Length: 154
Image 1 (cartoon, rainbow, N blue to C red):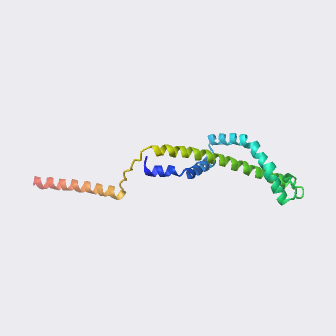
Image 2 (image 1 turned 90 degrees about the horizontal axis):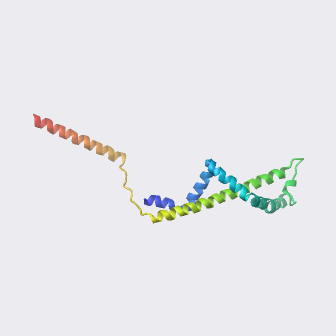
Image 3 (image 1 turned 120 degrees about the horizontal axis):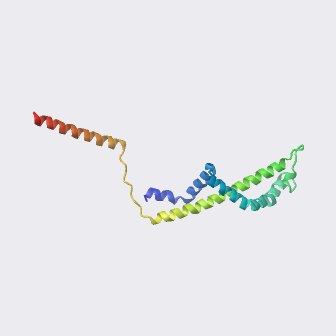
């Protein structure tokens, strides 16, 4: 393992955030299944948090009653929509935080394993200029040997 790889694994929270974000953005079937399972497992708890704790506080702050779903403007139940929207945001945030915790633990374990491996120094790769210079040296050496052979044949 190189020092650069070890330094990259050292950033546990940053890597966990990137992993959680890519899992949300990627949207593959495995992550979708995890999301469904987590949503089902935490659905009741988060719904209770949203409906019993957060919604009454928001409703009292904005409309003066403790039930946001009863908020109505000219026959339009805007309170029900806001309640569903806030519930969705809270559930999404809980799932993302759970993924963040899982990936933080995973990256911390990988970093601990990486610390136990010896650090191997990378040999620097030659630049394009160095490769061109080597080719030119080979061509020059070939030309010199050809000129020497021509001169010895005369």
